Image (cartoon, rainbow, N blue to C red; front, top):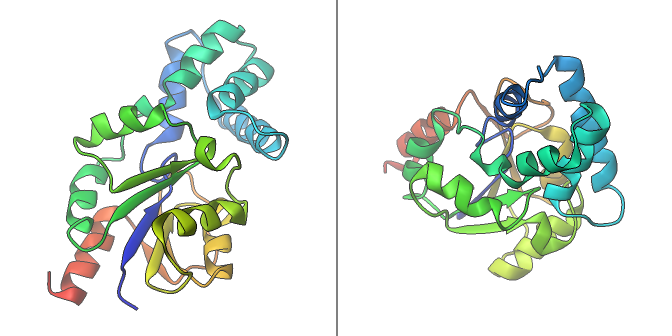
Length: 213
């Protein structure tokens, strides 16, 4: 089914979240090993599964716990996670995809991170739904139900959900009857998907050819 809406994961799929964390920690004299990154993501997943906290608070706690940063330094990183570098294909490809259907963020982050991300893109996305709005984090299905209510959508194959992560995104999207689109990034969790692309640009190429845009 042709897309009528694209929803996108942001951190790790649109932004190079791992590189951003490496650069932020390096600025404070800390190297980010793969083991430390995995422990940070595990700590964040644990905190996200508990009583709701903002993503800035969760980043802060995870960096204090795993890296040993002081709370003020950790919070400054959490406040600015939306400044992590974009993947190089993101801005150009999203511009092309927005000519096909609205492009909407579904992100485990805060409202304040939207301006940081969109400043890098150079344009506003069609909409932005974050954990702070929903008061829950992906992979909770409530995130998708919230977006459906706000956008007046039903769950069907015309809604294409795009992510590098099966565990946080694509497994739920498929269970709800959406079109699940896996985009490979350096850090990813592969799984079942209706489409797989090596980049946002490859996805845009495919759809422009299919739809003769």
